[in-house]
Each structure stands twice: as structure tokens, then as C-alpha cells.
Length: 265
Image (cartoon, rainbow, N blue to C red):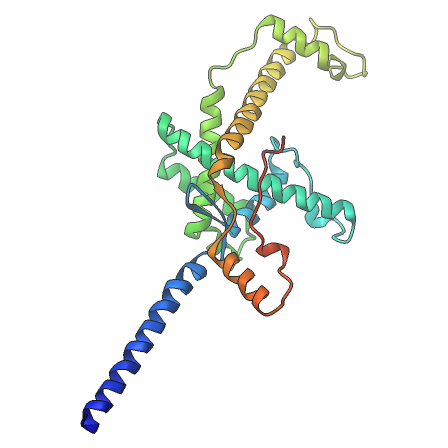
């Protein structure tokens, strides 16, 4: 074989080998890179770590959450009680995101739609609540497509739950039952407990609000149980990094383990 042909063949084999190596790296590397910021999947759709982090911040300000007024951000991080609350808050945040995705799907089925202008308003309200005036970096982050989708989930969830309880009513018997349980909480300015008749107006309002709240909690629990089977807590990035750590004898951190979510029951 002439030297020129041998040289061409060598160059061809080298180039082909390099291209195959690049292709293999892309096949492995692209899914790994894309899933680096993914916390888990619901029906194949990614839920980002940013959504989880945002929910951890927002859930303590949600009056319908069991973690309402739980401010772990100002607590002592070395306190075991704080550490326990942090774990519980993260679990509750993941569960709420799963529920919101389920509610978003149900909203589409029922025709409960949040208009683009309403979402725009929700984004601006969120930015106003979460970013200091003049903080352009944080404002830009909060207006990013990923955070917009998070805020849209909140808006859709709220619209869905409002439609769920719109026609709810309470009967006189339900109001009396509510008074039998919570009557001790109704007092006058002097601290004397009110009778049923004296507190009737407030009772009707509070009993209705409580019934709506219980319906919402029941719906969330049912949605979580139904949707949990569609959750995949592992990602290509976690899989690759677990393999990498094991290959080089590195202890695999908990953050790289597949996310496991239960229904809380």
C-alpha cells in the first residue's frame, strides 16, 4: 500500500474515532448536564431544584401549610430541632409541588384557566414580595422562565382550589357542630364566652371557611396519593455521579441518592 494511502487511512481512522468519541460523550454527557438541576420528575416532566428551594422559602408563609410561621432560616442550624424541621419542610415542599402539578393537570381537564395577564400580575407581586428595591440580580432571577413556571403553578393551584370550594355551603347542624368544638374560642371584649346565638354570625363565616379548608386538605391528600406513582426521584446526573464516586472510592452523599417521597400517611 502506498505511503500516501496509508497516511490517508490513518487520518480517516483517527478522525472517525474522534467523532465517535465525541458522539459517545454527547450521548452520555448531554442528559447528565440537562438533569443536573432537576430534583425529580413527574410523568417525565422535570421539577427543578429551584422550584423546591422556592417552595421551602414560601411554605412557611402559606396559612394552609402545617409549616405556617416555621422560620427555619432564622433558627440555629446546629439545633437538632431545627435540623428536624428543615427535613420536614423540604419533604412538605416536595409534596406540595407534586400536588400542584396534579392540580395543574386537573385544571386543564376542567377548563380552569389562569390568563397570561393574571400570571404576569402574579409574577410582579411575587417579585415585589421577594426582592429588595434595586436588587436587579434577584429581580431578574425571579422573572426567569423557571421561576415564572413556579409562580404559575401557585396561581393555577389557587384558582383550582377556589373552583373546588366555590359552591360549598354549611348547614345549621354543621355550624352547631363547629361551635361544639370551637365555641371556647368565641369571647367578648371582657373575655366571657359567647353563646351560640351571640356568636352566630362569626360562627357561620368561620364554619364555612373551615369546611372549605378541610375540603382542600382532603383534595391535596388524594392528589398526592394518586400522583406519587408518577414520581421518579432519580436523574441521569445523580446516576452518573454515584457511579463516579463509587469508581473512585468516594462516599456517595445523600444528595445523590434517588429521592423518595411518601404520602405522609
